[in-house]
Each structure stands twice: as structure tokens, then as C-alpha cells.
Image 1 (spheres, rainbow, N blue to C red):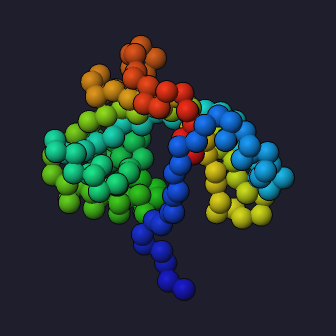
Image 2: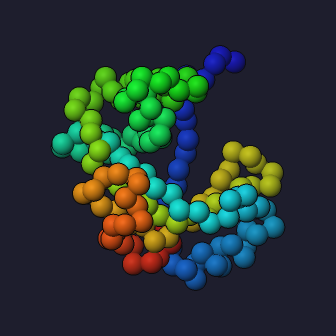
Amino acid sequence: MGIQTIFERTEKKYIITVKQRRQLLEKIREYIKADEYGESTVCSLYFDTDDYRLIRNSIEKPYSTAMDYVNDGIMPNDSQIMREIDWAMHFYNGLKPQMFIAYDRTAFYSKTDFNLRITFDKNVRFRTDNLELSAYATVTQRNMNGGRYCA
């Protein structure tokens, strides 16, 4: 078996109600364990072109690692991340911050399959101005899903 050079992940996303989340967790509780961090807030700054070509092609990059490389030339320790950032920087011209997104996430892992992770996101919010992660607490965000969970 050769070295994996492309990161592969399969995601399935659903919009569900709080009641559906509770019912699902009741059914799978014995097969999963909670993430060690419990519920946490995830904040992301997405870079894109002026015509949003990157997001339309569904490519995501880790913010802090990408910014260290883009701004300071600090090479990531993870060569996979480096290859993905390099590819995006060369393929998409004119990348700049376009959207701040935050959500509250509760994560679970399978007790038997370490590749299986289940997350529940709620209170999804975004902004397209004041695009700094440090401005998270001081800016009113628009709620995208009316308080429903996104799983």
C-alpha cells in the first residue's frame, strides 16, 4: 500500500430538529462516546475569490495553518495540509477573507470504528464584514438556521 497523498473524508449532512437529535442519540448512545471537549464553539474564516469560486467547489482549509503559511511562509508540519494549501493557492487567484462562520458543536466518536465521527452543530451564524476571528465576541452574527441542529 502506497502513501496517501490526498486527504479523503466522507461527509453526510442533515438538518434535523432538536427532537430528532434527542431520538437519534437515544438509539445510538451505547455505540458512541462523547468527544473529550464536550460542546465547543467552532469559528472559521473562509478565504475565497471575489466570485466565490472556492466555496462553490467545496474546498475547505484549516484557518490557522493556512494563515501561517500564507502570511509568514511557515511550513505546516502536516505535509498533506501543505499540499492542499499549495494547490489552492496556485489554482485560485486572488484568495482573500470572504466570510466568518461560527457554530456550537457537540461531537461523538464510535466506540468501535475510530474513523466514524458524528457531530451536531447548532446556532450557526455568519458575517461577511469585520472578517477577523478576534472580533467573534463583539459582532452580532446572523443566525442561519433558527436554532435547529445541523448534523
